[in-house]
Length: 196
Ligand code: SAH
Image 1 (tube, protein in one colour):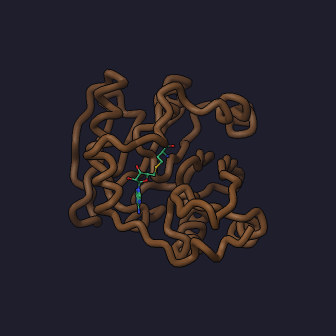
Image 2 (image 1 turned 45 degrees about the vertical axis):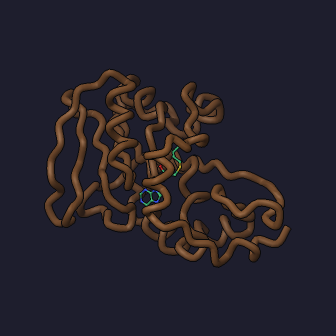
Image 3 (image 1 turned 90 degrees about the horizontal axis):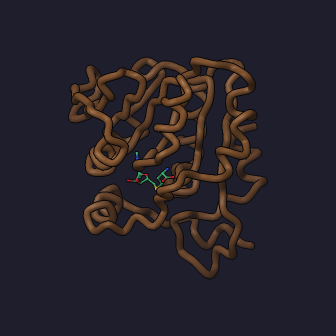
C-alpha cells in the first residue's frame, strides 16, 4: 500500500465541527471499543488511580468506563458539542472553566472531578497545562490527525507520558488509494519511527 496517496490531505477544524453539527459521527461507538476491554490489563498493568489521556476524544464512552474504575480521565477535543453530548449522554453534571494560558480554550469538568475534557486543539496542550499521564487510549486520534502533523502529534504525546506509561493505539489497515480518509492509513513502519 502507498500511504503517500494521503500525505497531503488536510481536514480543517471547521470540517470536524460540521461533522458534529450534522451528526456525521459514524466513528462514535456507543458500546465502547472491544479492543479497550480486551487490552485493559495492558493499559492498567494492575495499577489503580491512574491518569489516563484521551487525545481527540470525541464523546468516547470509554472515558466513563475508566472514570468509573477510579481513574482520572483527561480528554482533548475541538468540538464543544461533542463534549457537551458526552456529559449529557453519560448523565454527568459538569462545570466549565477557562484554561489559564490557552486563549479561547475551556475545560469541561465533571462535578465529581475525575473527568476533565479540554475544548481546544490538541496542539494547544502541553504537560504544563494537563500534566503527564500513566496511560493513553489512542483510537481515532493518530489516524485522524492530518498526515503532515503526525510528527508533531507524536512528539506531543511522548512529552505527555510518564516514565512507565502505556500507550494503546488503534489503527486501521486498508488500501489508501481507495479511500481518502480519515481515518488515515498509518503504516506500521511509520508508527515505529514516530514513537521509537
Ligand atoms: N476518539 C474518538 C473520536 C474520533 S474522531 C472516538 O474514538 O470516537 C476524531 C475527533 O478528533 C473528532 O471528534 C474531531 O472533532 C477531533 N479533532 C480533530 N482535530 C483535532 C485537534 N487538532 N484537536 C482536538 N481534537 C480534534
